[in-house]
Length: 298
Image 1: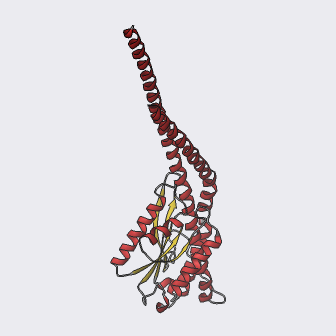
Image 2 (image 1 turned 30 degrees about the horizontal axis):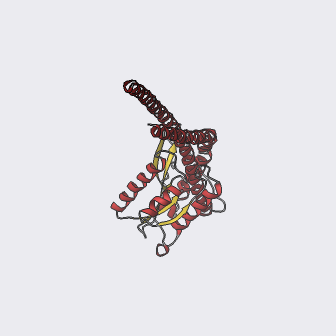
Image 3 (image 1 turned 90 degrees about the horizontal axis):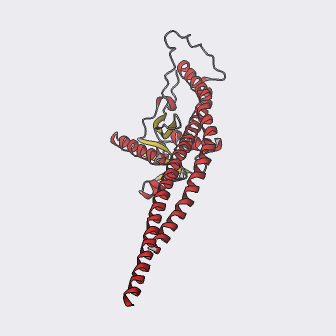
């Protein structure tokens, strides 16, 4: 029984150490979630302004741009999966990877050829372990994305979209990420970023009509400047959304892990006390038995 006490005491000590780690990770995530949430939700105004600008050029210029009309010379489709660099965030990355697999299956059923781009070590490791080719991956800073990283990702995807078909060009660009809605709700989303779907060409009923524009130097040059800005900004916004979702998922997961550790410590403590009581009872029984034996021998 003494051995059982030692085992339970070792388990209690190990669980207490884990509890401290879980609690620390929960506090770190909680301290950063506010800033990440504000960054994710505060970028919408600039993004909407870019959308309106792109829509205005497209609606008034009657352009035949591949980013708007799409491509028909290739069946390759780029898919960007935004995952985390670290674990301890519950099912955050697993949910994104599951949605990515569903998107790939759907695209293949439509006769298209998906090519993978991945942000985050979890996604990179997942696809490489399963033997899926990853064209390019970006790791580091998934919970605090930088504009430089978003620009690098955007430039790589734009280059693939504008490249000739025989040079690996793609006809579409889809992004799978997690949208932050609240501290308890994060929803995986699949968004087709290219070709663009322009829906603001006509003013809604009751609204002021859209103004007429004159473009200088030309609508083509304006659009060529706006579209890369639009793509980079959308990707940056999605990385910010993913970062806020990751931190919220990690905080919730670590809070649950801390509670579970406390439950385990209580269970191990009760079992250790039971073993200790059994040891005491056994020792008393041995003493009494020895005393009876001595009395009998006399």
